[in-house]
Amino acid sequence: MQDNPFETRRELRGRRLVMGGILAFIATIITVLIFFKYSRSSPLPTALTALFLYGFFFLFNFGALSRAGLSYDRLFGTFPEWRTLGRYSLWVVPFVIVAIASIYLLFLPLSYIFPGFVKSWYLEDSTIMIWRRGDNYILANVINYLTIVLIAPVLEEFFARGILLTRWTVKWGVPRAILASSVVFALLHTNFLGAFCFACAMAILYIRTKSLFIPMSLHIVNNLTAWIIESLTMDLDTPAAYETIAEFQESWMIGLITLIISIPCVILFWRCYIPKTDWRVPYLTETPNSENNANLSDYSESQK
Image 1 (cartoon, rainbow, N blue to C red):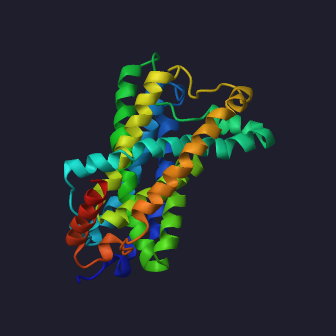
Image 2 (cartoon, rainbow, N blue to C red):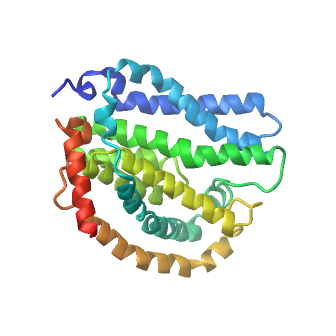
Image 3 (cartoon, one colour):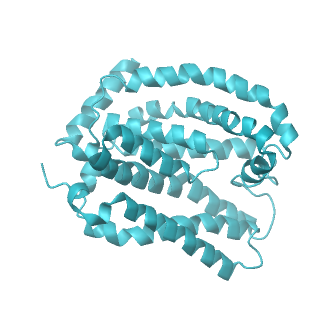
């Protein structure tokens, strides 16, 4: 096996990447304050904020990654057949259901204890995906779409699963690496619980298939599904489906139904991907391509 840069290179230490994220956040705030001082709530500045964040994060870590001597073939693995990608993408439906259930599990109890927090964090500050009017709203929608559906999934999977998961596996082992990288991923999202569950699933699929293209593709389809749902069902002028705490609390039945549906979905996912999995992270396997092909073939056979 070739030398493992995750063991020998300081550039790939997890805390360095996390610090890059913190610096990117600070740089984004400064940029927005300088260039959009009087129009921060307009569609275009709001859309550009997320784009700046990902851009700064990539720039702050690009130098370290370029010096680390990574083998991207080993990190990404083999690109699977389109048919296989399509089958994995079917998991987006239960993922969305679990995400909805997690919203109610997390925020419904909190809405009775800390209603102000839920109102400001979830009801008012949820990510706006689409605008119907406002200055430069068409350009803002294009930028937002590209950021949410393409840029965010690719960069988040690359850093959270490809880099952090591998680095922390070397340091702590697979279980704690999955949990730690999923916590970091979840901190970037409003629905912390749902994002954490999604991140754990993506980490498991990355390890199971030995292909980073699988979680990347699923993440893209997941975000595209959320974007389509919002465009079809939500009032495009509001950032949340519920404008008041009372309205959110009255919709508790949605949470109960999605929770009931989520339980067998979680059990099915566990039975499909937890047993008989080679729990070595892809970069730490000597022949990741053959592992990937074998696992993908096993999945295809199990679906017949």
